[in-house]
Length: 174
Ligand code: ADP
Image 1 (cartoon, rainbow, N blue to C red):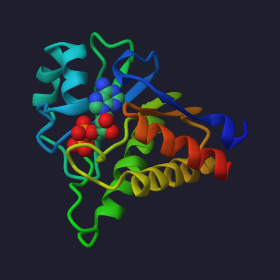
Image 2 (cartoon, helix red, strand yellow):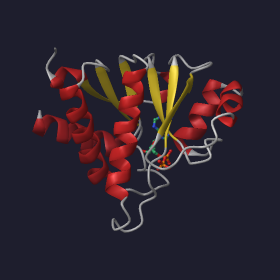
Image 3 (cartoon, helix red, strand yellow):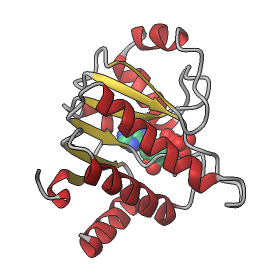
């Protein structure tokens, strides 16, 4: 198996343009669309996505559900729900870790080889960015060490601040 370092990438981009097996959506528990990356994904995938999402019955925080990608270049969308940051004393860390690990498990189950994550919970949900990045990288790395699928995981940063944080952590630790 390839080195873990070669199986993790970071880029600054709009996640909706990526040609990967699946992109992850930072959704809310209704799975019926919202703002931020969720809004961008629904906009780019087209209205058929909402039709499928309506059949899913929502998604609890930390869990994940899969749909087709519709008009996206990505074949699938894994919808997960990150926690809203309150004060760090309400299980936020574990819930964010679950959002990443349950997305990875679902990707593996569906044979997804290339998977792209946005910076879950770091927008409207206000999870501290550096803390979220460390947790995301650690969770992905641990999963990839034990599993050969997905082959490649990309962290897709939209804002420059997150991009800088991810580059710094990955360069320091790998
Ligand atoms: P949350 O509610 O989980 O915080 P947001 O969508 O508000 O979700 O923000 C999560 C992250 O997604 C933020 O870092 C934000 O900059 C980023 N983001 C917003 N639009 C896009 C996009 N089109 N592609 C990738 N990331 C995006």
